[in-house]
Amino acid sequence: MKNKKTAVISLMLSAVMAVTALTGCETVKKSDLTGGSDPQSIFGGNSNDKDSTTIPVDSYPDYPVSFPAIEQTDTGDVYEAENGSLSEGLTTSSERTNFSGNGYVTGFSGDGSETVVFDVEAPSNQHYDMTFCIASDEIAKCTVYLNESEISHFETTSDGAFTKITLYGVFLVVGSSEVKITVSDADICLDYLKLTNNTSLSEVSYEADGQLSNVNAGESAKELMSFLTENYGDYIIAGQYVSGTENKELELIYRTTGKLPVIRFDALENCGDNFDESFKKIDASAQWHRNGGIVGLMWYWESPGENPSVYAEDTDFRLSDAVTDINIAQLSQEEIRGLYGEGKISEQCYGLILDIDNMSGQLLSLKNKGIPVLWRPLHEASGDWFWWGASDIEDYKWLWELMYERMTEYFGLDNLIWIWNGQSADTLVDKDTFDIACVDIYLSEGKEFKSRYEQFASLQRIVGTDKLIALSECSSVPDIDACFRDNAVWSFFGVWYGKYLMTSEGEYSEKYALKDSLIRAYNSSGVLTLDEYTAMKENPESVQDNTEENTAEASEAETSEETE
Image 1 (cartoon, one colour):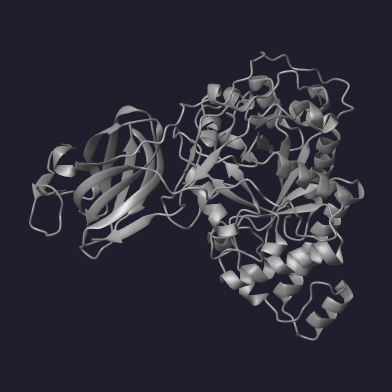
Image 2: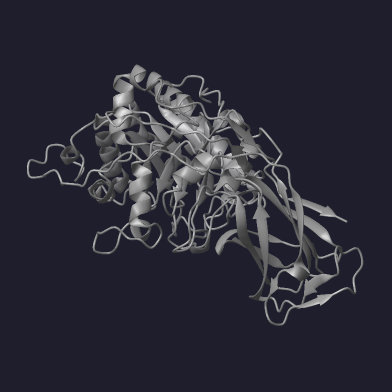
């Protein structure tokens, strides 16, 4: 969600991680997998709207997942910086010790304007590790480009020693490529770039156990989780956020691609202690389920108190003032009100309980209809922009535990599949209180989204291989071919609404993804859409042989720094 924060939201671990080497394979989705409701029962959010008409769309073929066949080839070529193409103002020096070759390149102004370009020769199509040897007396930010497309950035050390910093799993095609590096904030001494084949194997896995954290989970939640788990690594499930009950984003996607997403994501809201708007969204979610889709909900939680807001800077509510050692999760409101009256819990704590209870009451209506929900509360907790992330990490974990226990045990919400969106190792909550781990990634306009394999691998390292990994919010659809090539097959993606998808006139916007990218993604054999999802549920055996086995090997998901 991007009302006040900008730039890329990703894991707060390291800027550069690893990727997997994926052998040549192709996911095949039969074009006759069709099912689900007529789109006219979806647009407008009211299946009884007699005036709605089906919008004609172009038809598109299936786009098979494809990428160059990968061949593991040993290499260890070193490219000296002084032999690269240098911007004006950069010089070669040999004043420091322990450098390679005839010297190193220095003289960077720190404004990002100077570049060093390496002409590298890849012996085969495969994932490579790129190691830069750099010395710096101050922390500098280095940005790396492959053939003019930014692939990563990292920070240097500041101890003055030549240090090796490795980007793991960069895919190169056989032959010549240009690797460019720019430097911001400080001068550096750039010694060399070393190219080696990626040999760190088998960390990424799609063998999640599929067990729900709630031991009393209902059948609808179990069935949905089983479906997600069984198809994890074979398909990426399409999802889209909507801005209202009229489903205009879904209509636009249908008009543009001829397909509909499986997951309709929506953000429940409260205005202080007023939850009226969420009732409408709950009803629209129920309608989506009746149309055959999956319901995804998050909570845009305005804090309790006189100045309610989701943003920490706009409210005087402080989560630290609400924390209590008293186990209140399963007490009645009368008992909690008594504790508040006796001064044993704070007004802030009492306000949290009232809000959680109000939201639980709305979610109960979905439970009573047998509707499972992908439930993502307290999102992006690693950042300090929302009030639940602006306090101490232990306060956030306390609130997560309180909400989880109260909703699952006190209110008996057995239809929720809990999604943790903490986005860092520090904010990791008890693994017995969530089912799916996810990350939100937003890129600037015009920047290719690609697979975002580094965030996928990092998140799996945090939570383990038993949890599904998903792309919960994104500024555009990912590159599906790259996801399978890089072994970053997200369980699902959810593109945010507004400027990330459409213009102010309601037409498709190409600011964040070209129209062709959206068409190819929704018609890719690696992406599951609503018609295919409903067909698979109706006749699971019809697709048993549609996906060839993916043979994947993964590399270490971390940035390596080694001082010479």
